[in-house]
Length: 137
Image (cartoon, rainbow, N blue to C red; front, side, top):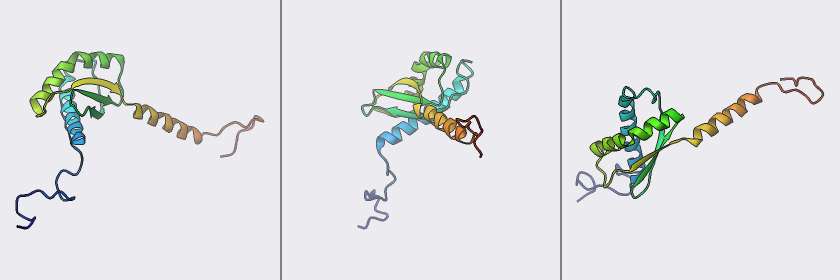
């Protein structure tokens, strides 16, 4: 029997699953949470516009960190109150051995990117010479 049309999955690079299970779980959790949060913004005005940048789930599925582009104190409080509801939504939509306990954090990569952007923008600005003269651009 050949590999084509035999119903067997080829494991040497031709299969549908070319990335680890953890990456697939993290991505599906991100999608479910993004959709759920979008619907929940009507329930709590503190949520505002939240952007989930990533989800990092422990390999044992006990905990997952939800990384957000920004996270104010009000948003963190609202997410803490809605955490159980979001976990129930995951349980309802995703078939996993266990539903992870969620925690919410501001994504440090976003803060670093903003800092790098500010540094790059500052490079375009003329700087004063120690002699008090403006450097030519």
